[in-house]
Image 1 (tube, rainbow, N blue to C red):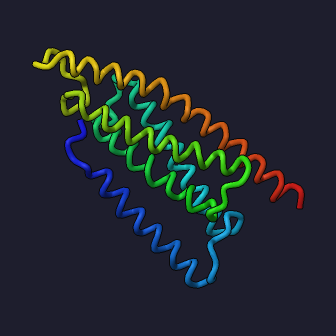
Image 2: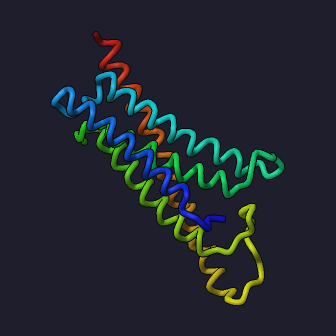
Length: 184
């Protein structure tokens, strides 16, 4: 159950820290950190790892209800936190250049983050227990049924976009490794 915005505040604070580090590199080098240099690669790699954690760990916990790996609400907060910080790091990795497949991957990243905000809004409209289970039989049943239908529709859009994003990202990484490393 998302009653606080703790994960959003933590993502904001970590984003400020990353922005400060990025600004420090810019200040020292007097240029935008290149995607192919050490700092740019580190941003891309760590951001992508966070995005993978966003998808894989939360999905595993969600599908194994018998596991006692913590409350679903905590995992959802983790999902939101890593789903904001990871894409932000990947955005900084781009060096503000959006060409070719990398640009398409960045576009999918932005779309999935916006979709995540929409899903979070819909999710908060469905009453839940502290463990994140939906509460049945409330006063305004038709409005809550509508929220559940919206959530189901949102899932049918959000999950395929996420899959396309990851396929695109893996192809981008393969191309970057091939052209930047193996051809040298």
